[in-house]
Image (cartoon, helix red, strand yellow):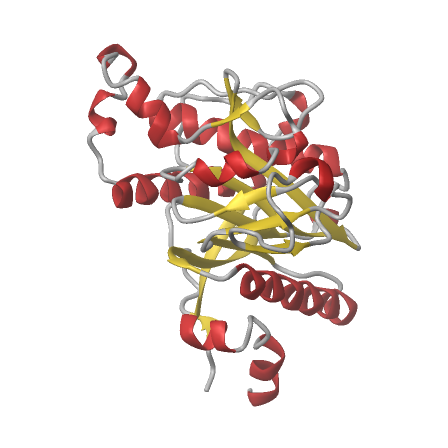
Length: 295
């Protein structure tokens, strides 16, 4: 049984939509005449266990390395999903300093990963994007890559919710005032990226209180839903109607904007790829090799 396949050679989403919010930074200059194919694995309504998504990413990275070795290039991939509640640690995380609970009796599962950064929380209501892209065909610069991911989120917040977000000098992520809405942590192997970014949309922020998120003690964590709630009395900023949207609608709107802004920032054309979620979870994400053998 093939559980992962292309559904169409036609882009499944409108791309390069007009936006009044232009990129101001010179390092994000885009060549509109060059586009690359990006496989889109869209699980944004699903809660995919962290270890399943992690295994899937590593499988895809191996697949792309083999493709480059055999063909000289590879397509890009974007995975978008939600996770059940889980804590993840970066490769250099210091657990004693940044966990406010007994690591032998954690409130949720904990995974130490190979990504950069400190401890963070993933859970329902948070959209997680895992871009697996070949930076040799974009720009071989991890700082550029991180700033471009941040720009994607900044554009989403501005164009979709009229929320003016920014970067903070010396820190990674996307901020609105003192609140961090999006966390980033990446890894690159032979210039192929994995791991990625997490944006709090309707997330219950309580689990963040049991850690020092990203090792930053003097700032808070926020969500799109929380900011819209704060702004509900300010109809002039265009967010009053959005405050009345239910959680599913907020997730849907944010998801749509994320994938559109990502395609613009990286000049990508999506082709949908499907997977059986039950089989994916049963196989812990490691089914790409099996699929290749079957076909």
